[in-house]
Length: 371
Image (tube, rainbow, N blue to C red; front, side, top):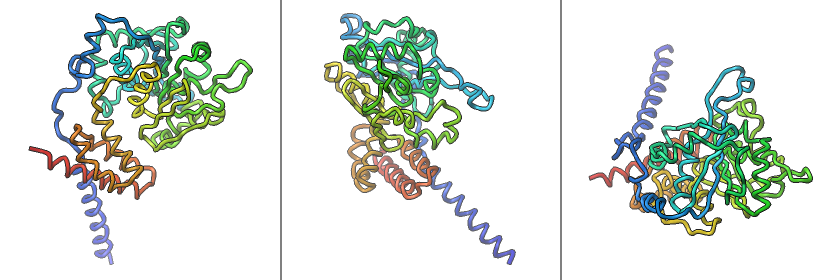
């Protein structure tokens, strides 16, 4: 009997090892063709023309990007433990470069002013993000953000609330944010926000005391996205963002978890998560009356397109698009694998298995293209 039990346990162990080995074989560990951390704006073709134009042309207008000043979770919220937070660099850097490439200047402000806390996620950082870190002008603005109390809304055509978990603490109930949004909406200017950035709008009221968001179409980082990776989010934050927006009467548009989703309601433009920033930035340029300059989609964007095809049309349709997408440029296999693991974490085993098959198909197509 004991031999039979040991044999069963050994078989299970070997099966687990085999599965882990197969999953590991799907990881893309190919070395990068270039050292991304050394990327500068002049290395990116999309930005070269705008860099030349900066010295010769006046900007078409100015946009204010607002970032959080919150560097740590409030200890009282997280049982006395300190944990760093701030704004997501990718949500600022990509917006900054798209607006600049299309002739608009971007200023930066925060509730306290000065050097606002940045969050750099190595898994998400790419060329545009490192170019921002290596650009003297961009970093001068980031390290010396204007204090919101000193901002004149008349100077700007749009205000953009950058995401990052820190914004959940110092954006809501901020009197200067309320002043700026009310002044800009009164003049039909743009209000923009992404991911946790809509926290700036969550508690705004009209002059008659009614919620500013009532009846407006909006999106943000969703409860599904928040709670999957941060199960105690309701304790860490003053509120769950999606729930609060809905409580305020917003018409919340929830897209698939961790996939791009953009919502436009007149002069209000919101994006669901960090992967929505590219769409939001180019929608902003259009709303400002300019057709965005052509831009080669990033590897992350192409991979998100593949994931959206899988989400909307199924695995077979996604597999059929792999070669066409690879012809446009690289795809991030690890991003597809990550989404498969996320689906497994959510207990969506069928979806997780489908994404693993997509990862395997992508690996095969990538290997066929190797010299």
